[in-house]
Amino acid sequence: MVSLFSQSVFHGALSPPCLCCVKQKDQFDNLEKHTQWGIDVLEKYIKFVKERTEIELSYAKQLRNLSKKYQPKKNSKEEEEYRYTSTRAFLATLNEMNDYAGQHEVISENMTSLITGELTRYVQELKQERKSHFHDGRKAQQHIETCWKQLEASKRRFERDCKEADRAQQYFEKMDADINVTKADVEKARQQAQLRHQMAEDSKAEYSSTLQKFNSEQHDHYYTHIPSIFQKIQEMEERRIVRIGESMRTFAEVDRQVIPIIGKCLDEITKAAESVDHKNDSQLVIEAFKSGFEPPGDIEFEDFTQPMKRTVSESSLSNSRAEGKYEPKFGGKSKGKLWPFIKKNKIIETLLGTKGAGPEDFSNLPPEQRRKKLQQKVDELNKDIQKELDQRDALTKMKDVYIKNPQMGDAASVDHRLAELGQNIEKLRIEVQKFEGWLAEVEGRLPARSEQSRRQSGLYEAQHSPAVNSCAQDRESSPDGSYTEEQSQETEMKVPATDFDDEFDDEEPLPTIGTCKALYTFEGQNEGTISVAEGEMLYVIEEDKGDGWTRIRRNEDEEGYVPTSYVEVYLDKNAKGAMTYI
Image (tube, rainbow, N blue to C red):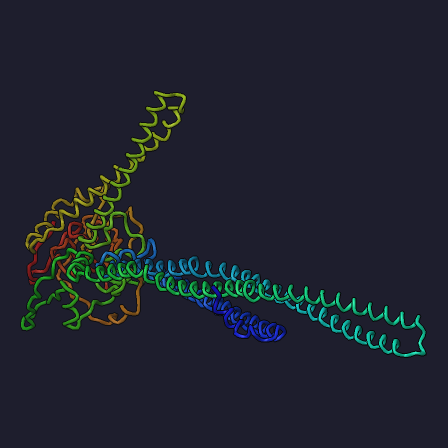
């Protein structure tokens, strides 16, 4: 079957041979330009896909960096924030965005391998095939042109020999008619004419043979060789067109394949958003900041019509603010200010346990927060004990194997490690017992109690003060309701005097409501406490409100809280609720 390309050439097949060669050459030039344009289009599409893959990789990288940027840092406060459902949903969104970025990387990889790589190899093969086809075409064209030149040369030689034979024949006839010419000249002219006629016959035979050969070559050229070459070029061009179409289809399929996975990522983000529970998050906040303190009691009515010393109740900080009476500044700069006037941010740091290392028993925290910290510590220690036990069991089994099979190892080599594990387990158990004791103590204090029961508890502590005051005295409560170790803890929070406290320097001091005698020496370590020596006499400015602390004053510059059980209080007769603590 003759190709469409060859038909366009054979349209001029009846033209003279030389003209056909010229037309054929023009068609080869046109086809060569067209096929080169096809290769350029293919290379342009490869470049387009390559730039698309670079965009996908860049987008995926930016998404991963974005996800990494907002991931919580290890061992940081941000990890605690991910207890809430909203922040966990955000974390799930970050993880899904990471997977989302991975799908764009898959798009880039598949396009690179299935389109860019394949088409690049195909273009190289196409260039080689195109070069081969046009080389064969030019070779066939040169061959037919050579045959045509040979035919033209043979034709011109035959024409020349015929003319020479005619001239020789005319010369012979002229010599033969002339009576003045000798017979020898006539014979010579006759022989020359015969020679020329013979040469003309030989040229005619050669021309005839060359013409037959050229016609055969021309037929093969236009009906066999050139159509075959054009057919190959046509097939090559059609394969190129089909290949670029398949690549475009693959381009779409690569995107379509990741759509379900991207949809799953979006579904997971939606699911995470639906898991946000505002009630649960609110409860977590309540549990995190619940202090365990009881609310302050009612503010007592102060009757200014009676000529008596009045007592200003400071059961709550809001009372002082409402009355416009702030805590006056007593004591030197070395003692700092009383605890209710620590700056707000420092109070929050203390409640959350974020300022400094703090005491080992977390006595700087409110009761409820302290209980949680102690419980957390107990759980951590129990986990450490379990790990040590698992290691010991594993080593014990290894030792039994070594005993039964000495060739596998020395049983005595694990004895040292077993001894270390035993010591570690014993130390951890002692730590657990210590923290469990503190936990039991805190849990015994946490249940809500009435004002009367709290005062009875304070009276009970005062009655048993000799035992509490022994050298083994370990614990006292602080005026903020927390508990700390005496003497053994050197890391108590010290709040320096600030400009915030200087606002209250000129306030009127509280009046005295009685006197007291120190039964035991007390070293005030906490903020707001005051140190007293055994037998020292001091003034009472606020009686025990049920929290086990009495507020006293030494002089105009020094005042603070001491445990009620450490002093013997003598209230004035006119003071309300006067009673003696022994």
